[in-house]
Length: 89
Image (cartoon, rainbow, N blue to C red; front, side, top):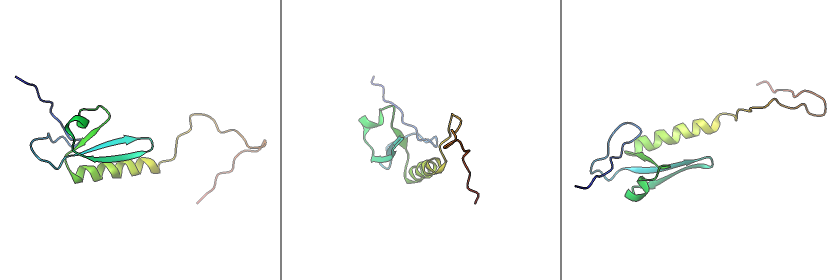
């Protein structure tokens, strides 16, 4: 008896016979959406999505993450002996 992997979307839906599933790969440089490919879906760095709704939600979350300013883990260094001035909106 052969064992088949079960694919689950980020929303919790398990893949059945529908062909509307989408694959996504998120990197520091962006997000890439791809049509369903069984072999590619087995990769650890691929996100399986059940359809357009979950794909657009992933894109929206990614855009929100990209808008956030990078958090510095070090103290800012003064420029030419002066402290940096922050702009106020």
